[in-house]
Length: 113
Length: 113
Image 1 (cartoon, each protein chain N blue to C red):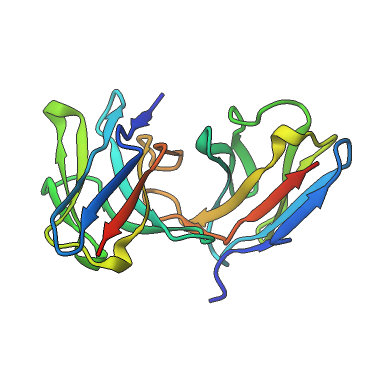
Image 2 (image 1 turned 135 degrees about the vertical axis):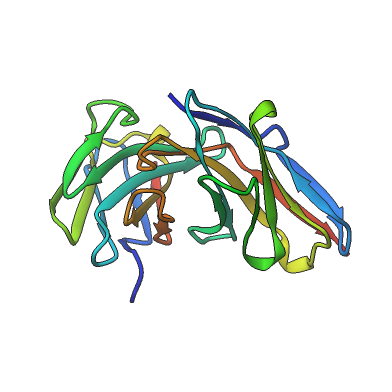
């Protein structure tokens, strides 16, 4: 299995631009999570899905952030418009749920200038 | 809502010395608890987990953790650390359905030769 695949690995963009981060979970995993990691705030849960349905988006910072999961093998996290304070590493993870371990992608390092 | 506290931001130990990383959680019911490790530039990898039963759980790479309900703690231990153990360690707690997983702020472990 290829594991959780995230793209791009690095993204540099200017303030105000739209940013789209992509994730392909492990096949058969019913749960998909988006986390954001910064030095100041650590690893924050933004949103998670079960069977492609958003279950809890209480961690999404504001309306500029949106996430979708159109099918079981693909999810996106979009920031529009982006701001410098959005600079962070964004991780996608998937799992079978019910306490099974999270499998993390290698993350997308976002820099907004 | 669940929460996790890792009081130590950075710990340095000598190679071959014992290690204990602290973790305290807050959750109204019996928690699901995890320890993950993150190497630089990588996603997180599961070290061990506790759901029920024996309060001392064994994990990979020679790590173990003990669940103490009376202290709301789940400290990670290793009897003898190796230079390759240098990494960031995260404690995490999940809700009763074990689907929403919240991470602590992490403890960075450095190894002194």
